Image (cartoon, rainbow, N blue to C red; front, side, top):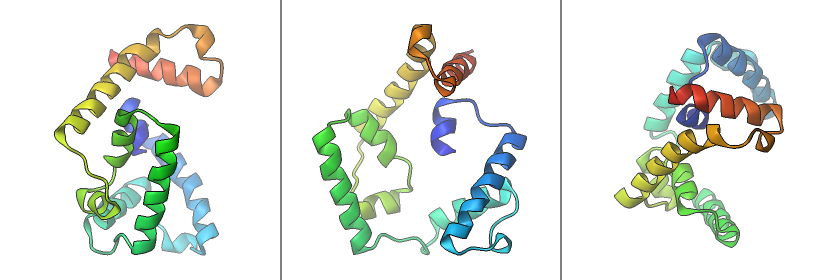
Length: 147
């Protein structure tokens, strides 16, 4: 949802509730019952924000090693720095630092410029480029966000 809202207009309350209702089904994969999960999006968002700021979430040695492996793999793919910065910028500072991701002001500015470019350029791309329904919707939503 954070990535969606970074580029596209926020979902309506109804759409967020539908999204959360579907997402709750995945709790069963992790052994959670529906009574163990927040019933509404707002309560999930509040729980998530509190967890992100608490000491309950931490970066273990194993998690840090996985992050390092992902960084090595990402280096082979060579995505642009702004793309890496957008991803690394999502977690709170304490978790980002725990994973070994360092962002400076130059990185933050590059990510902000990238989002601005995406919002400006994507709606102008040729219709043929947007061949799938989700891509057409993204293009339409970017146009709406710009106005």
